[in-house]
Image 1 (cartoon, rainbow, N blue to C red):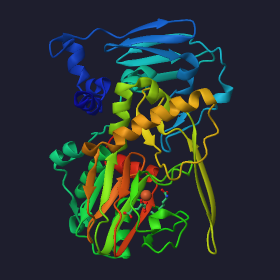
Image 2 (cartoon, rainbow, N blue to C red):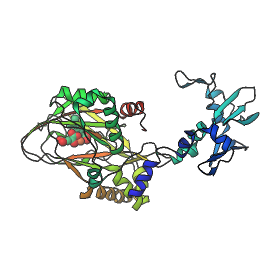
Image 3 (cartoon, rainbow, N blue to C red):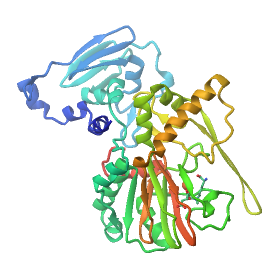
Image 4 (spheres, protein in one colour):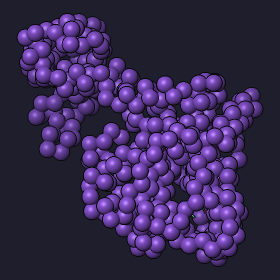
Length: 411
Ligand SMILES: C[N+](C)(C)CCCC[C@H](N)C(=O)O
Ligand SMILES: O=C(O)CCC(=O)C(=O)O
Ligand SMILES: [Fe+2]
């Protein structure tokens, strides 16, 4: 399992990306890369696509796709990175009039005279064959030992607020592990908001923008009690669950109240390895989650529908887990001959999520702000006594990933 996980990390930079980074002028002259002879690129025009052999990969590039992805000035706006070309105007039976390979570029002349010029590196990087092999987001999946032995450093408030290198390191930790910490934050809602905004935009929800809650049952949800909460992800009842959950415990005078963290993707990968058919059910059967609240001040009825595990179809990478047994709603979207199999699959995932060795327990104290990837890492809480006050907020995932990409991180 661990071997597999580290492969997924190394897959971060694809074969083609690494090759493209080399100096090809030298290579063309020598035709030799570290002892390997580089075969020249070759082209075959098939009925509906062009077959390109380049640096060890064989790609099939559909003619309509090629015309659609033309990067000439009239087809593509490089200032805005948007397509100019009207895809609706491409002849669906289009075929090149003429093709040639020149200086690691493919040049196509289309009927009517338009010319397209594609770098072979770009094609390799953007072809289906290239994408199928690469990981969208490299991650280090963990159980308690793996996480603890990684000795992931927390950021400190001062450096975090002033240094971009520190923010980049924080984001890298967050992307790899799905959790990241900032320490020594002043124990106020304002400072929590500031530390959060350093990362990205706050996502306002029915709970507010910044929320501060205690066990006062002010809302129709057990989070607002002293009860223990089993591992779960939040806002499963949104079609797009919140991307990040931020928690800062401003005060706790009493006992208990530790938080539990479990890497949902670690558990999901174990299920995939042991019972691919269970993994398949969990990633295809749509399930409803629901939040119904009706009292004096609050009227909410949220419904979110989607499978427990969400995967990219082309490379089977998991990108989102919705797991909240409290908020899971009536199952009426599955025929009876599938229901029991789904429960068996769900039980297996639950057992993996509940293995004690997968549980990371932490006591949040004033000053320690945790960012949790709510699409990946479950959180829970131990029952507590006394006054416990937690503040925090949600972030939307797109904005956080965009920030990370801005630092050159793969996300
Ligand atoms: C975090 N905050 C206390 C504001 C909201 C808690 C929401 C809890 C809900 N059952 C869910 O899982 O989404
Ligand atoms: O009280 C806690 O530590 C967390 C409760 C919870 O699950 C939530 O607010 O989403
Ligand atoms: Fe929660």
